[in-house]
Image (cartoon, rainbow, N blue to C red; front, side, top):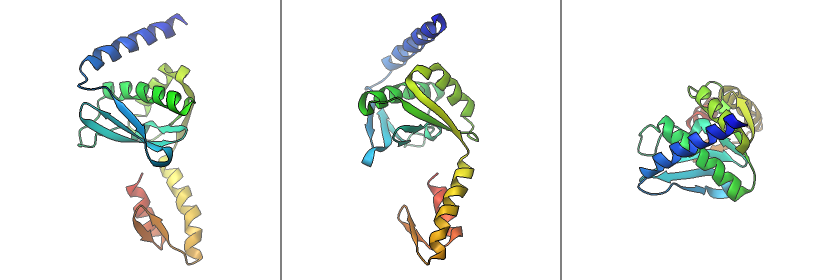
Length: 168
């Protein structure tokens, strides 16, 4: 209990110190149909995978201008996102972490620190999930149908996998 309070106060101090450097407050908004979150601060922005109520934290990594998001920025962004989801969606977020992502341990440690703001943490393997999707969709090809991924229409498994990999 005391350790949680100390962690909370230390995190708040870091946020205040960091926010002093903000040129503007962070702005977060839901994407179309509440899928995805757009995060803007200091003239930079990024898009974060969010499928209500699941926040895919391993999608946080690069600003739209190509600059890498620092660990400090990720940590503060994570707190802001959890607050935003709770305040606007009315529920605690479920956090998903790709087990093969280089930041897996970073995100697990942040989830432990923010456990009071998180419903649950899901660990998944993105490659296994991709293969499951391909297997499900490939049935349509056997029926002579096509599938549109993004803005590309495909009619075979090879092209499907190639297009899906662009979006993961």
